[in-house]
Length: 211
Image (cartoon, rainbow, N blue to C red; front, top):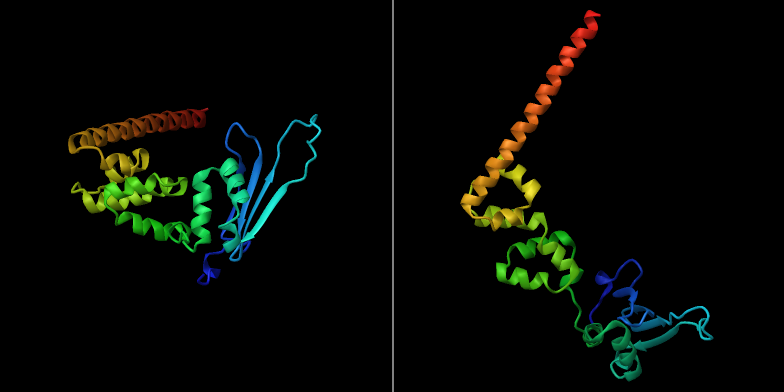
């Protein structure tokens, strides 16, 4: 397998993941993958009154080649972490590294902005991280500025800060104008309230000085 040093975390791992097993099981598991080994640990979670409550954690440690043929390990991973996790680890052992998901957010945002909207939706459905990135305000601001003919004015930027660029992108021109007018009216009312308050305060200060 090619050098993986650039893709390791600060613990020197390709994967370092812990979670609770799939319901109804309450066991706890830990997956730790180095450039040479795949390690799977699990802890049996049972009531303290049971005789096996002090059972130590189990561990299966394999080289990549051995992992591909370890049926017991496959069975335990499938039982506790699910088949998608097992298939992911098998692909990893075969040399298929998920380079894309290991890139920093700013690089991924640049890539995402160049996707067709249909592909962006599909990418967002793959995992929590991509869902968050594909729905980020940073990404949708770039898409809005590139795709929408509506001029980006300070009023529109203020509205986007409140509503989000993605919502503005999917809003038609008439609805967008209504939202902008409503937002402007709210700002004017807020400024008027602050102005009235300031006037009353000034008056109060003058009265106090007169006393």
